[in-house]
Amino acid sequence: MLKCLLAIPLVTGCLCLFIKKGRVAELLNLLGASLCFTISILVLTDITKGQPRCDFDGLIYVDALGGFFLFLTLLLSLAISIYSIGYMRQSLNKADLDRYLGRYYFYLNLFILTMILAVTTGNLGILWISIEATTLISTCLVGFYNERTSLEAAWKYLIICAVGITFALFGTTLFYYASLNIPFELRNTLNWYEITRFADRLDPGLTKVAFIFILIGYGTKAGFAPMHTWLPDAHSQAPTPVSALLSGVLLKCALYGILRFYIIAGKCLDAAYLNNLLLTFGIASLVIATFFILIQKDLKRLLAYSSLEHMGIIAAGIGFGGLLGVYGALFHVLNHALVKSLMFFVSGNLSIRYHTKNMENIKGAVETMPLTGTALLLGSFALAGVPPFNIFMSEIAILTAGFSSGNILASCIILVSLVIVFAGIVKHSTAMAFNSPPSGVGRGEIDGWTVLACSILLVPIVILGIYIPNFLDNIFNQSVCIITGEETAWMKEGFSSMK
Image 1 (cartoon, one colour):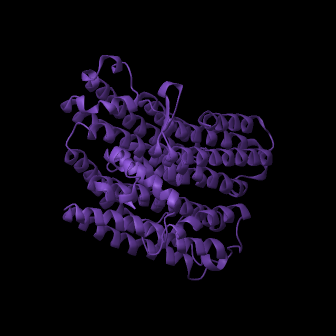
Image 2: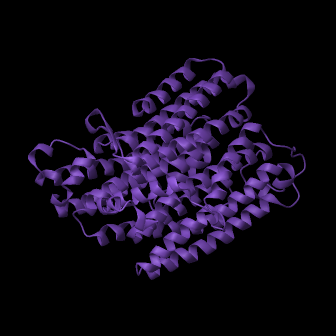
Image 3: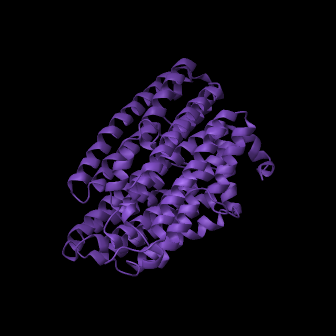
């Protein structure tokens, strides 16, 4: 099944490139995304019942943590494939639809392929290669419209992330060099599982330096401040489905890379050293994002800075440590991905209907687009952390972990920032949803496919604010145990003490 997950996007993308009929390419892409999502559920179900899945002598390795990120990647890929059908029909001229749609789906499937590889590889070198490949492929998508602003954003994105990934390469090399104290037969491997087994023998001094390079390198791709400067431009200029994929999935793949090295380093270093680093980057990202959210006028740039804010919250949750902090962080990974993808879908609908991304010119969305306007309000409240939506639950878990662990100052900073962000987002969203719409603005939704995509995401956003299904709870519990190093003890108890 894992081999199929790597083959399906590649075959689908190549077929879309050579098919000249846009409608055929749409359905083919949707079929491929549906197959991949179905397989991810089967893989995840299998993993949570027994041992991790391993293939190609460890090059492919999926445990509960990787399975969770794989499920998230393919869930959003399916939603984005559905949304792309309606959005791309409206954003491209009819004359260009057959000409450019195949190329769009080709790049989209390659992008998804690289992210699948990133979260399913067991080799730290392949992990670096796959995350670097996500940059190269997604650059083509950021500059897809071939306009001055989009090309400028694509180049900025490419250069900054290329510099960051170079730091990650150096960090990976240092981790390998620090592993020279492990048994001789393992010195020639970058296999994550094998290195983790003997991680307590790593050179502590080199490991400290190596993790800093990893955090800066992959943190650049994850959008942590102050390496985040590519994020607002890339998110605002890319096609809206790509923006949703960048924010909902790509940032999380980079975070996944950090977590893999965090697990290794945690077995030979003091947890306080690693947690303080993550907490520093997390708080800095949150504070910087709070200021820019308040002054934004461009809707997609607002959502981009919101991604910076929420990545900071996730980093802080891991930095607080403990079972609750890490559980809350992983839960927030899922919640943010769902809500932010929904909000980008809404922004795409609004920008097409109003012919602008300037929030000052978007008024009366509930009147002009009843379904999209309702999704705008619900999604904004969820993004701002209003109960009973899902983000409120994960933010409460992270804050509780912060206060419980004695990080009072950091927890208070997060709490104050969340209150300010709540006020800013609610102000922006209500102004767009209500008031009188500008003259000349049409009425009605832009396409049924875009409404369907928004509806699909709204369902789990509401449900997860009230109830966490048992299978998700089990995935989170097992992933927490992998990250915290408690897997043996918790697995023997069947995770009963976590529930």
